[in-house]
Image (cartoon, rainbow, N blue to C red; front, side):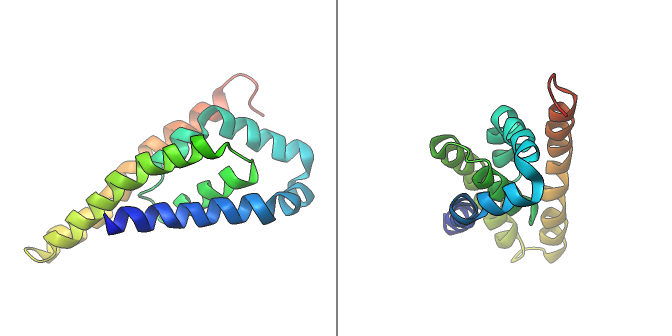
Length: 135
């Protein structure tokens, strides 16, 4: 549970900070049109993206930041965050516990779990790019 809570809290901090402080900066960097394209992508696939990226370091925070920048509704964000954080936290805890039995298995699993997530992330991004109205 502690790992799940930690993953959830890190996503929460990224989301809230970017929502509160990052929107104006993002608008200045990407322009309103660029921000709107990202906003549209997050509207369509944001909840799925948030949930499936919880096991991938760096990507999990980047997606939480994008959710904040695009002002994804809190209910949608936190539901998706919980859906991805709980299984990921338990998976990482199991990997850590397996290190007591076999360091090799723990190392293999710690590499395998994020690697198995990449095909899902690829599919989500490809779907967003190929969907009608995508720029």
